[in-house]
Image (cartoon, rainbow, N blue to C red; front, side):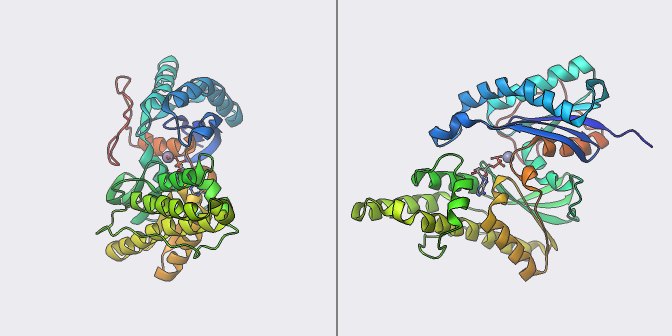
Length: 341
Ligand code: KG4
Ligand code: ZN
């Protein structure tokens, strides 16, 4: 039997330090250290994030190697997130990956984080894999994109946010409500016992397949300021309903555009990726849409939706097959387009 390709992948684009080992398209280990340090700041503090990556990277990589039960000299390549993301955070993973590739004399593979979120669908874990062409809604803390895939690396960006990302909308609304960062999971949890139709917020009117979330956040803020003037306990007394209503507003914006995109592209497979795709209301709406439009729906396992190194590893595996290796001279890039290498 042919020896599998072993890739060590490193992800450090935002506030999670993650390392994974893949044997071809199978994940042998996927270890992530989160960063508690940002909780009270209502968002990621870049300087604190890069320092925490410095502390986490060695133990996280060490653990990933141990759990995968491989030796360093088994590795065929070292993959890392080149961008987009916070520059100081990216530099930690980039420098580590470069040093290890030099020390082990194995190639480097540079991965675009946004491509990796989508390619997470191809991790072999027993779940069905989308067939090409398919449409992917990528929803994360920094991006909201509608992408049409014709093959692994033929990605056409057909819609994106013109201001805030969907995850950012969740996080900013959560901050307005006084919840801790990251606010998305908090809103999801509190919304479980709330009425999603209790409060209505104005929806953006954006042509085509682009999204906008900043108006929604502002109308949410003004609405709460007005209500709090009349009743200072308004937020406390209505927390669950407020969470359920704002969650519904965000989900509706996403699903409306997805409907349009399905009609326009006539695809039969729809997929979702990124941290926000673990949202329970979005998952339900996404599955219902699939049923309604006769499309097969795909969402990666929870641990492959939020930032993780396994998705960097699977993207790197496809690049390895194309001998698409990186250079020791290339640098981390904070801003990176979907099709940039
Ligand atoms: O993909 P991701 O882990 O990191 C980025 O690349 O940004 O996404 C993080 C985002 C955060 O905004 C977080 O609040 C959101 O995903 N998120 C959620 C949920 N879990 C994570 N948003 C809504 N509901 C959730 N359950
Ligand atoms: Zn991400």
